[in-house]
Image (tube, rainbow, N blue to C red; front, side):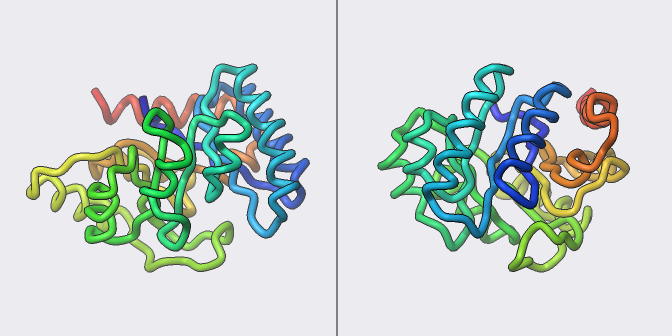
Length: 211
């Protein structure tokens, strides 16, 4: 089951990422993506081992960004792949059929490509400008999500679409109205003083749209 709220880890140092992950787990999060850029694989492996331990403690899923071999080694639930990362086929060969493989997309053509590659979900974005990603694809906005959902429906295609990229709490209801499956958030949660209240607010916004 793909969760409707994905938390993308954030922090200046590896330790910051782990602290942020534990805080959001305490708030009730069940889906964590460890996204630790510009670091060596040894450091990432150490952080991933600690992140898996935290997620297991709170009965949450851990997805590793970019590195299927590390996801396998630490026992994470899966991997998320950018369009320029390892192919889905190669990742499946490493992880096996039972683990989760998610993929990034920016256009309807890329979403269909991901469906053909048999990913489990697609992270589509960015919704707006975000500083957490270095090479930013064209901004989609809510209308971009709506158009992608509409065209998938017309083509009789279906996959969980997770909206991502600069999403704030106030955006969630509007984004869910477009027909996407869920949202991925990072700074919108990391920077909140009362994480539990904020996480519950996101859940409420999503559940309201599902009724």
